[in-house]
Length: 175
Image (cartoon, rainbow, N blue to C red; front, side):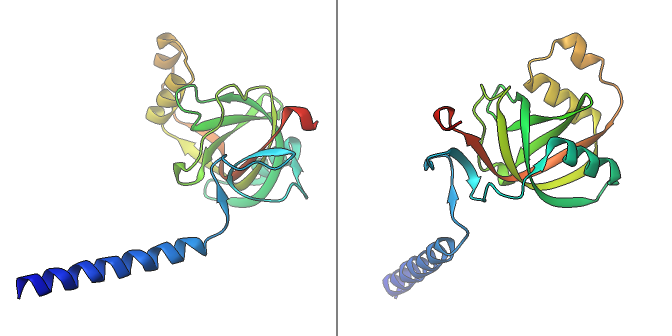
């Protein structure tokens, strides 16, 4: 009897596992940087390199947003900095000494740590939020700031953020 129950449990687990694999196959195509086109290195989900907003247009949109507002968009901008521990975030230059802090959907992909100074195409959701002192200190530490600079952070900040579903990094020889 116990053997039959164990067999039934194993077969059920196998069938459930097969179904979840089929569901994942039907999801949007995704690459974690393994696959490349002839023009770009793709990080995250694919998107077209058309109808891109400029960094200045993104800044204008942010200025009109309130905390909690979101806006789906694709933007082309220069990278100011990247997390030097893993590449798990980056900051985009919006002009006017303003940046957008970019994170990646579900912590599912990372940027090359030497990407600062490059232009990238980013797809996702722009939003405005208040960043806590604790998070600001964490980000400063990840960016390699000195302890004095980290200790100087004492107040939360309104920040322009972006949750990216995909990033296209132009290949060096395709420019």
